[in-house]
Length: 339
Image (cartoon, rainbow, N blue to C red):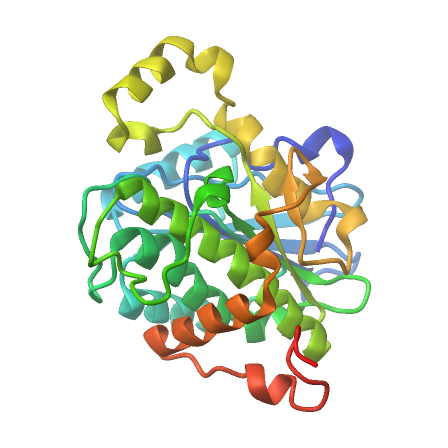
């Protein structure tokens, strides 16, 4: 993974960012004799949310950047591709279809990505919906839980082999999952993850963000036990001025409209912690962190419960059809948190 110099770090995600999943990779150009490197990135957007591009960088190395944008709206995607090419003077921009509300679409997307034979050094899980009315995904999951959490759970697991192959000692691949301070008031209802008994948009959103933190910590435990050159951490962007607030209480929207410039972060500022988690040398080989304003902080105490992490992981594997390797991974040393 290439590292940005200080001047570029906070500009990497500064264009077209609102809510998406990003992947970046770099590799030596096979046709280059001077060690130049190619970079690959893709972003995934959901519903009306904005497609975005990642401005990548080169410090001392010569780079070629290939951007793969993924989303479920072809017309918006093609317009984004046009704008990116125009703004960056980079013609290496493509569009791939992916809908995080569909397990089938995610699997097809990963298959298409693998066919390109590209490495993958950074995966930023940042797509999501917020406070939406009660509705379900293509697979019948409550939308917050299905898009914000299960979609990223499946996507990450399907890309783990590529991440492992792309990482190396001293150059670990990274998974950065974007949660929210809302997770602090979230409760994980393992008996009703789909909020079918009682639906509260706020509770469903908070649960999905709490699930992302639990998922990340268990993922890091698995990666460490397996000796993978991959790390996983959580980024908290803070309160950011985006279109995600269109479903919240009208009073909140009014405050956002009147005081957003003062209270809310800009999308650029909201991306800084994700960028930091993706590129800072200070986190090389280190995972299982919860980062806010580019600093490590404590997440909700319940998120450090390895048994709760394991239970959610097991249930998520069942829901997405992923094999649960927890027991075989820890068979020799015992499960985390157990004597």
